[in-house]
Every structure is written in structure tokens, then in C-alpha cells.
Image (tube, rainbow, N blue to C red):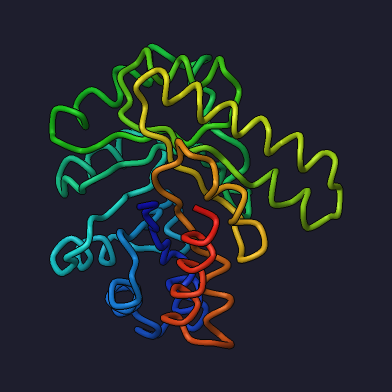
Length: 243
């Protein structure tokens, strides 16, 4: 069964806009579990623009679902992950000026550094995932340095769909499909995520090697109108139908 990880970052974004305790990301995580989520994803950014250290403390202390901690490859974040030892750690590129994560990690260009960086996380029992594009060179590098998982960046595919650039969208989908097959052949577990909606999730969910999708912003946006539980249940229906 294709797993769904629900990213709760933007519950914290709304909370931080007013500096109040509400809405609570932990409550969102519990609602996600009740609605059928298989895991919770939270990105602890260097600038703490949404998820905070206290949120990670609360999630680790209270969650019954696995936590996937997204983070940049910095010494500070490594120390936090080693202290908490979440189920999974997903290494993502991060720039302070970006609105959201842009593109994937350059694993091939930073192989030695990333191999050294993820080694203590692996030894601590965390499943290490690398957020990358579908370039074969990046996938092969991820396998060489010992990552357990690659999460393929679906943002370009989703943007092309939104812009109505259908030929380019289909080419990007074909690239993701080839990338998933290559990663699987190299012994990597394949996840995917970024920008997925009810309209775009189906073709990604249909890729047979993809084992997990991580979806956040759209679910939080949709919850304004339908509630978080119903948004998650509808996403599950879309995923399962495509599978």
C-alpha cells in the first residue's frame, strides 16, 4: 500500500503569523493520524520560519506515527536529529531567501561531504532520505553514499501542470518514472513529493516503485474549506485509486 506522509509545516506558518499557540501542529498530526496518514513530516528550517524546536520536542514526545524530520545538511540540524533520533531524516537543500524548497540536493557534487554527514545519522538508527531530482547522476550518487531512501522532487511536474504546459509536464513525468525505476534497481526506497494536489497526485501515485508520498501545503490549504481530516481522506482516495 502506498504510504502518505502529511507535512504539517504550514499549520505552524499560520500559528506564527499571529504569535499565538494556535493552530497547534501536534493537534494537526493527531488529526492526520485519525484520517489515515502513515507518517508525519516536519521541516525544521535554520530560520525557524514555521516549525520550531519546541514543535519537534512535542512531536517526538507524543506522536505514535513515525516522524520524518526534514532538514538542511548543517551541524546544528545533525545535532538535533541525533538528540531526537526520529524514524527518518530527509536531507533537503535550503536557502533563506526561498519561499519553499527549490530543486533537489546536488548529491553528485557533494558526495564526500554528504557521505560523512549521513553516517552518524545512519548509525543512530535514522532512515536517511535525500531529496533529489530525477537526474540519474544524482540517484546513483545517493546509492553510493549509503542513503536508504530518495525522495523525488515533483515540484517541476506540478508547476508545469498548473501552467498548462502539458508536453513539458509529460516529459517531466517520464523523467520521474525513469528515475524511480533506476533508484529501485539500485536498492533505494523511492518516495516523492512537493506541490502535489488532488489533480496531480494520480500519475505519481501510479509509478509502481514509489512507496511513499509526502504532501503538506495543499492539504493545509484545502483544510480551510473541508477540514484537515476530509482533505487527507480525499488525498488517500486519489492515491489509492491511481494505485
